[in-house]
Image (cartoon, rainbow, N blue to C red; front, side, top):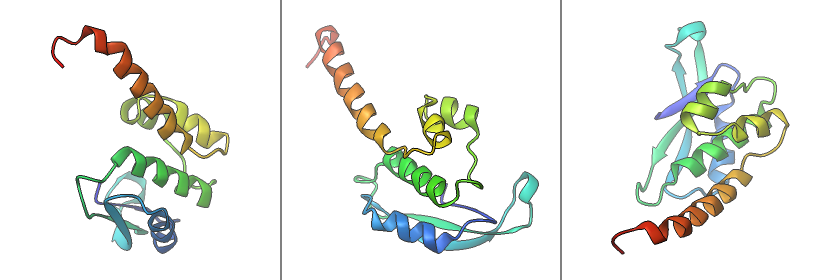
Length: 131
């Protein structure tokens, strides 16, 4: 996505919070647009435009977790995750949705996944044919 938003979102507040986290390769600005999807069609939405500054340093999973963290903390009643779509299809785990439902930050997942990836790299090493 290049932009996201909702009728209940304050795009400037979300952009400011994400930018304050100094996420690599990305910058966000406020964007207004008319929704073109199901229940919100033709409704004016406030949101953010995601500007990719450096595709080599941008970390999309880190950005997604931070976006979820910001939206769930600023809008706990309005921000609702589609459990199956996000957890299974997009993230491959229910940990994201479970954390949000429990009112916890999702940022711990990045460290967990990095640790699991490093463990996998070690476990697969004996089976590689080439270095």
